[in-house]
Length: 243
Ligand code: NAI
Image (cartoon, rainbow, N blue to C red; front, side):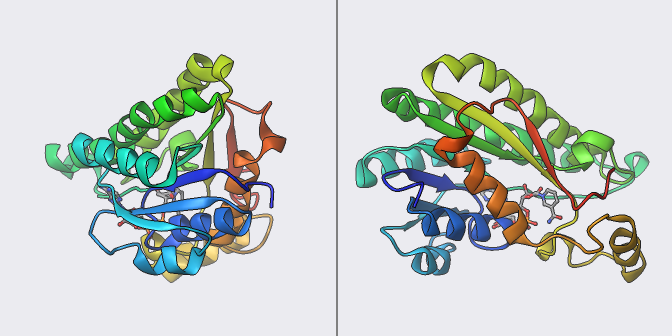
């Protein structure tokens, strides 16, 4: 139980990778605040986590909602040690057809959303002189992807944010790392055409798509005391797809 006594916030915890990360953190002993955009949206995840987990609203596209969520966690659970910036959206479109709105929405949620949560979360972490910030980027943020200019730009921006936060807060006992998953079986990738799914399966060294649990295991490691000398890094979890 390496995370016993730690309090964690996971954004977008209602399903997919966020749900798996919340469950894995709880299994390692953390008290997990499972956040969702809608009231009750993360109730099922929190119930499955047990161990004092709570379900709360945190819309990362709204600064007031983020501040209120972090205040609620520190009041009701006594602090905050681990922040997992998991929530994210896609609005895919070829650049020539991409609207300003599609660009702005994805940058606002996927990139500025992490700025909002980190800014609010570092205060309680500094008090504890211990913190773990884990940002979900993507291999698309490293290599780019046709039809995902907005998403790739946001995910690339998250890498710069990760490294900057690592430098700014390293001396306070706070680490900040990013996880760059490849293709993981979730609602976000459920509409992938079979042809693309087959191509990914045959290209990945692991010979399969990833599972949310593959990503969750990486997150629990980065959240642990064992990862205290790892900061500003991007851990690629893609089964060798981009080798
Ligand atoms: P998903 O679409 O299944 O879940 C995303 C979660 O974020 C949902 O719970 C949703 O309600 C929440 N969310 C959306 N907008 C929000 C907002 N404004 N405020 C708070 N929560 C919000 O996605 P999945 O696949 O579980 O992905 C999780 C993270 O991993 C995302 O950041 C995604 O970009 C990243 N990722 C996923 C990959 C995949 O293959 N599934 C690959 C690489 C990165």
